[in-house]
Length: 148
Image 1 (cartoon, rainbow, N blue to C red):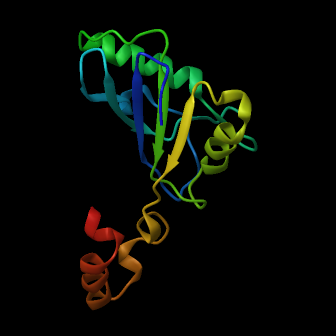
Image 2 (image 1 turned 60 degrees about the vertical axis):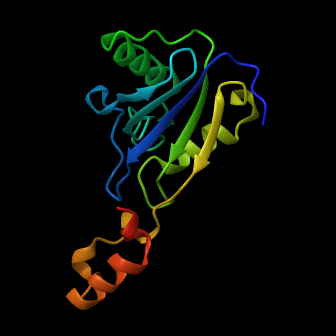
């Protein structure tokens, strides 16, 4: 895959839950690592704007703004022309999931980046406490929970 951009930024969406969606929170957007003039790794929560609870939208502009501000606070300047790879750990049961997926399915946003879906399976759907202790132990050592 060839990118014509001088910058390649990755935002990991790590805080997916099965609870009602909430708006993107600046305090949860962080620059984790970067290579000068190259790649930038950010982490954050679900990047949605939930002003309209019935129809949340993907908060691309707000996310990019938060990323720029966070990078600047660490003495890093993001280039104007960046390509966002949104690595989502969410699944269809997470609030805001469809807003994120629909945003990237819209061909009008293809030049802004792409969505990579990496759902954590049952880890985000059912809490460990609903399983008997012996089942939790087995699942923790043989399933996606082992990743955590």
